Image (tube, rainbow, N blue to C red):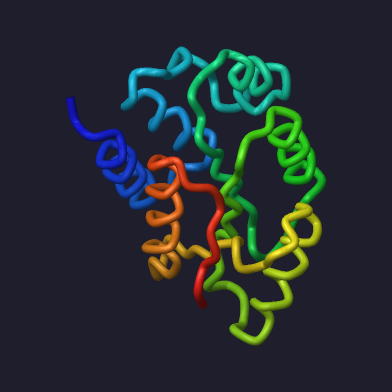
Length: 159
């Protein structure tokens, strides 16, 4: 059997290359590790809180959840609800600001700070900026995922 860290890295690289959303990426990783809920579930249904709660309650060995946020919008009410749910289940999250290439470099620091504050993270350095278009942040995201697979908690991202 392959090393779980290698499985996760391979799956995440493939999913990022295809622009897969966070719920689908979680399902793909879980499936590759042999822990997936039924793949017949419609993506819209998966987004419903009751199904997400059921998934989180099922006793899976989740090390973290990747929380994708649109960099242009910041933390929305749905993002805050998801973070609250993750906190209720004592799950670590990897906050990722997607479409970071759409923000001017001068506006990025303020957005990282706002998102970190809204999510109750304190340190904006744990928020990862990511662009599928330019691949900016790709290595930081892969490193954060690999760290969680190895059992490490949130770590600072050096920008």
